[in-house]
Amino acid sequence: AHIDWRIKRTHAGFRIVARTDYPQPVHAVATVVVPHELWGPVVEGAEMGLVQPRKARLIVEPGRQARLDISVQAETDAWLTVKLAWHGRVDYKQVRIRGS
Image (cartoon, rainbow, N blue to C red; front, side, top):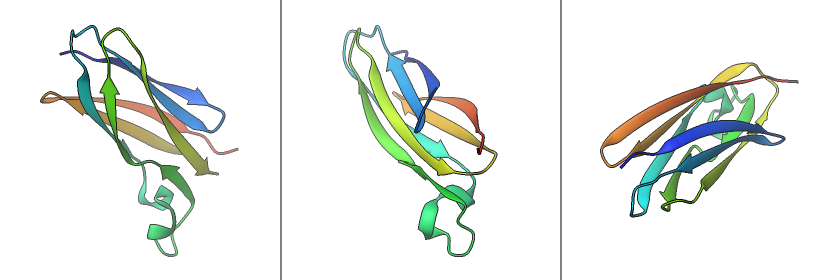
C-alpha cells in the first residue's frame, strides 16, 4: 500500500493531507517531532510553545483524503518533522515553524 501525503501550512499550524489508491483502508500513525521546548508544560522551565497532537492515528480510505491538523502555539523559529508509518513503511517530511 502506498500513501501520497504532504504537509500544508494553515492559520493555526499545519495540516497533513494523505491519499491512497490502495483498494482497502490504510491505517497509519503520524508522529510529530519538534524540539522539546515545544512540548508544552511537560518541560518545566524550558517551555517556549506547544505543538499538538504529537502522535495520532490516520485511516486513509481508498480514493479519499485523510486529514490531521497540527496546532502550533509558538513564537519561535524551529523545524517540525512528521514521521508517517503504515504497513511496515516509514516516510518523513519536514517544515519550518516561523515565529511571528
